[in-house]
Image 1 (cartoon, rainbow, N blue to C red):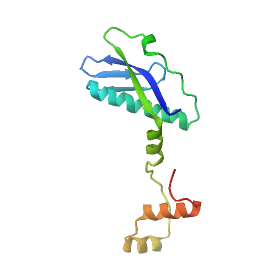
Image 2 (image 1 turned 120 degrees about the vertical axis):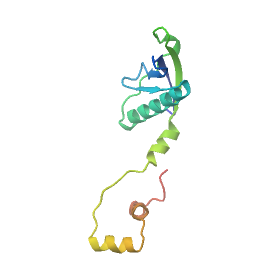
Image 3 (image 1 turned 120 degrees about the horizontal axis):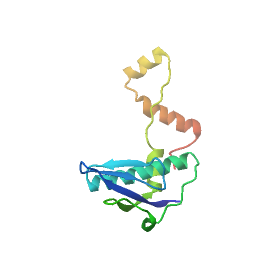
Image 4 (image 1 turned 180 degrees about the horizontal axis):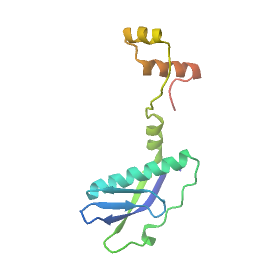
Length: 135
């Protein structure tokens, strides 16, 4: 599925911020100092949570209807949307650090010639795998 909408519970904190939980997603918790920041953080938390479920081939729970979520006095429910195609693409293109070993002389020569090691490794891997770019 490409888009999910889950209800989030916004609980005001005594210091003026908000604690955000998702009743259908155990452990998906975040916070924000302002309502705007809290909504942003809730969206970010939801997207990462769902991405991790997808990446682990785990089932994504069926979201509750916002009107059926019970909240304590002062708290409120906000439906939060996660549009996953954008998140999947962002995560697929996220740079990761790799440690590798090459001979000392090759390293010195490449540094002297100002070779971009990351770019060279990426080009070599694409060539080895017979691909142009990630799709």
